[in-house]
Length: 136
Image (cartoon, rainbow, N blue to C red; front, side, top):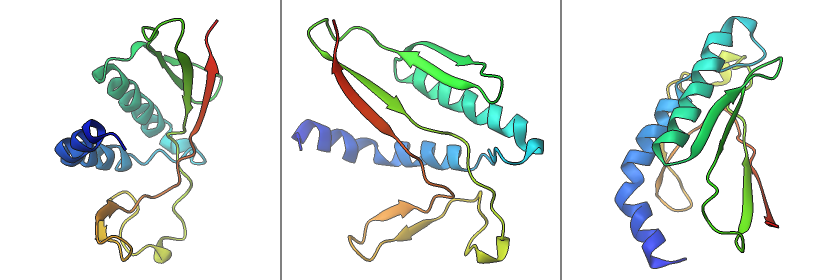
């Protein structure tokens, strides 16, 4: 990996971890209709984060369900590839609660046995699909 990338990661890991934990605390359970305000709060958190890193045209797009978070940055050049990132900000129900070692919306840092590095224990998986195509 590029040394500048590794330097950036090392220099900013505490801030990124803090931001990840902030997001993980939002109980955005889409299967629970009483959590709609939390789902919208998480969508807004994602949109605000995109804006803070320079993504443009950020908006919440209403879908008839929960909003999609959209943003773009179109300054790489016509000869550069387009990258699309897809993820979700809603999570699965937390029941049964007795299966949790810690409360589900109180992220904890634990040492891993494989690398001895700290990592957040998340409450749900996040799927991301990145696709790369040439811009015409």
